[in-house]
Image (cartoon, rainbow, N blue to C red; front, side, top):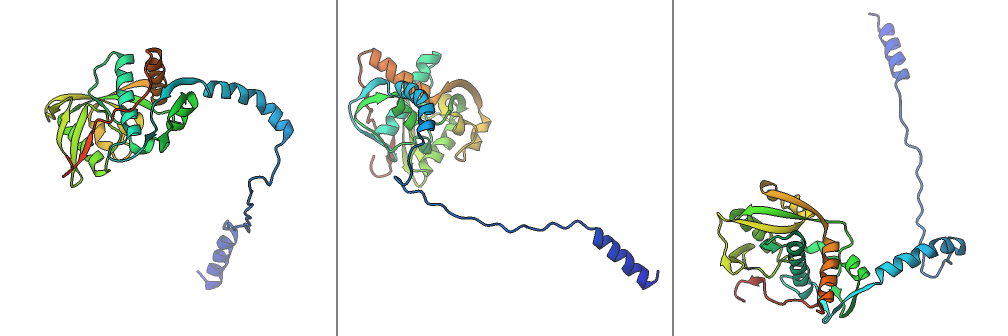
Length: 249
């Protein structure tokens, strides 16, 4: 084929090829200072009745906390209370006898719960997400993996039915309900769906049997506080040590 013909076809095909051009993009940052804007009265009037109804629900007092509860690792008043309440309330509502409860540390969304009245809003701030609870049936060897994960993370909220020592990122001297961990025994654990389904690097839990309860963690905490209040009890944290540090047992 003559060179002119080849050049003709090359020019023809390249000339028909679709080309995409990036348009110029400009951006601008707008800094809004508190107090530099005013409320839109019309919008405020629309929102007001809904806000009033919501505030009435959220500000309902459901219990009384006798002490400030702070969040920390490996144990703390707030994380202890959180896990203990989860375990007890699931067992009450489902008629179970689960062995222990765990919540991932990042799932507790406040650094403290103040002494004084506990409202619905208090619990929503503590647990704003719609996480549900799973019951997992697992062998002791899998429990060991889970507790090793917790030890390597320097502690998660865990119920008082568990005690172990952190040593070089591993869990040792594990006891559940006062008895040494049996690698061949089966245990029932209460976990949020996030962890049960592999969140926070717990994909190894896919090996065990799972039962979704459809119960929201937040609702469990609310119902726990309401139930204790109806029994004439105030809310307090059990400071029983759960996770010990090697050398400080």
